[in-house]
Length: 258
Image 1 (cartoon, rainbow, N blue to C red):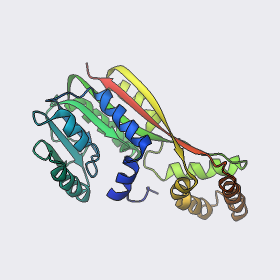
Image 2 (spheres, rainbow, N blue to C red):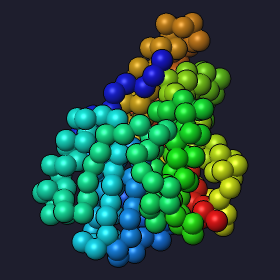
Image 3 (cartoon, one colour):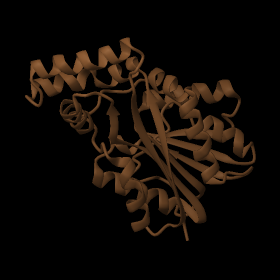
């Protein structure tokens, strides 16, 4: 089962967190973006990256964001107008596995938390297209989630692991983060940088992520009602005593096109 639709409001709330701002800033740095550069953002959503990138490249450059969702693109256009960068930041509907751009058109390509929603074979095709449209010497930067790293501290480890396996299976490509290096290396990039970012989770944040997955695990018989009760009790008590801990890892991979 696919993960539920993600709204622009949710994406914005996540992107504005200090942890994600740190990840985004590092991603931009890995692209080595300069004034006058042409940059592509694959899976641009509501323009959360195209607008900051637009400020980095300036009016002499260009940022193009592509997405399949017209609602996201409309929101991105509104935001670029508000930010005063719409003259050189544009958003287009496109299939990321067949980008409508010439080979070597961009100085850098960026994708963040997109490939987790793309089936594995298509994700490789998306990365191949990113490499194709990047200039020789340009950088491809992909950042994605490894849902296999999602964990919550509990003495009910067996129950927790089974729930997390169900949660990862809800994504089309739930282990996308760990696959990025291998995929991009096979595509011929050089001079790799691989960095990992740990995201601590609050009790409320973990509950938002897991609420549906727990019900799915129950419906599938992966856990029993009695086990679910034990699991909920264990993490509720941890929260009550201030000892709740959960985390998730995002992985950034940057490579240069030869």
